[in-house]
Image (tube, rainbow, N blue to C red; front, side, top):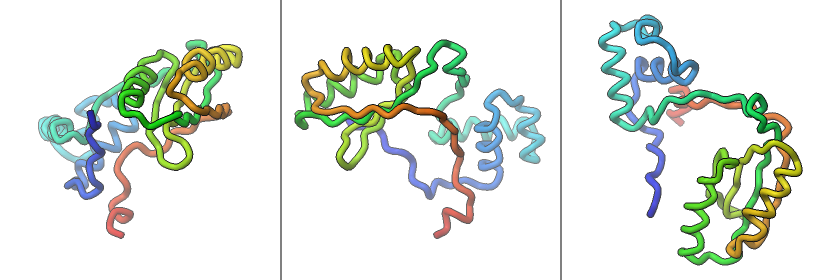
Amino acid sequence: MAQQSELSSNVDLDEIDRIIIDELVSNARISNATLAQRAGIAPSTALLRTRSLVERGILTGYHAEVSLGAVGRTVQALISVKLRAHDREKIDTFVQRIPQLPEVLSMFHVSGGTDYLLHIAVGSTDALRDWVLDYLATDESVGHTETTLVFAHHLGNRGPLPFDDMIS
């Protein structure tokens, strides 16, 4: 089954929508009253505007950020995966199975010499080696993997591009 693609960059967002999005990206636990104040609108309007952003598929969820190191997942890695063959049934099985594993933070379907890029977090380099052996090296659909250790992960901007950048 094909996954729904991202919304196009020409989504109709006005200045108030952008302020609401930026504030929620910065702090999803912000109170509606504070959000309204920062957007320069009434609290009832802020609530309606936020609901509209959810209904339009622009805001897709709220979540807590967990410190991976604080919960024992001190080793992060990016693993490039090249599949052995591009058989639809094997691809579907791989795509359904791998993201469900508890160590997997994200899985990306990518272009180029790699088919998938996995971001995983585990407790040690031994656990990383064992994970690659247990879940990738023994998978008959996987032809090649390359593991890169992550020394630091810095989040970027998760909100819309500034208006000026969208004009070009």
